[in-house]
Image 1 (tube, helix red, strand yellow):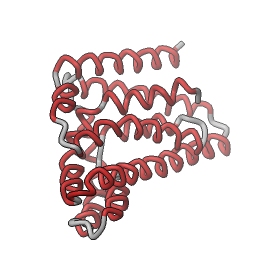
Image 2: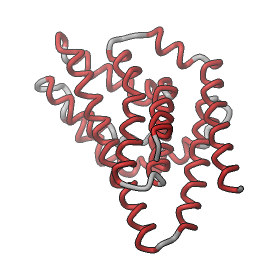
Image 3: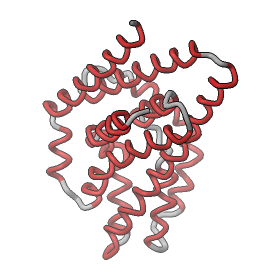
Image 4: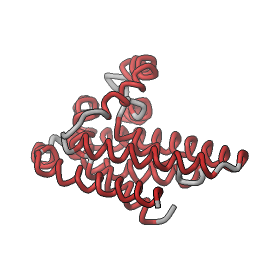
Length: 219
């Protein structure tokens, strides 16, 4: 993977601000308000915990797929995975542009795991200290999320555990500005990224990138 891929992952995280605010904004605000004078510290710790989960699962997925391809020497399998990754980005673009919500059906697949994890996070709130925000973020990083699943498909074809970690890390950093601002109660930022025009521009760019990736595989 190149620096362009890492930049792309960061930009997708940045562009998906509206979705992130919808998925995690409520808990982020609740956790931040819980800390009173330490709200900014709590917001940072919560988000670092969330990104830590992305790093772990990115490394696991990237390393597992890379090892499997190496052991079985299957370039065909890798090509199929690249096609799946491109389709996932396409679905993400359609979803963000509000043209088709098929990604939500894939998102539901993670609810089976989440029903076991969510009570763990719930028991940590209210926070006993600001530092408890970090483990809350770690657990919340596993919430069913179509954007995360789309990026994991990218991490899967990254070629190594390190690249998978970097892809998910850059994606996580891209989501950070939105989550910090919503923790601080910034309504204007939320309104900007949730506006239909901005969502359609972002979605169209992702669709174009996905189609380009598919064309490269076909040719």
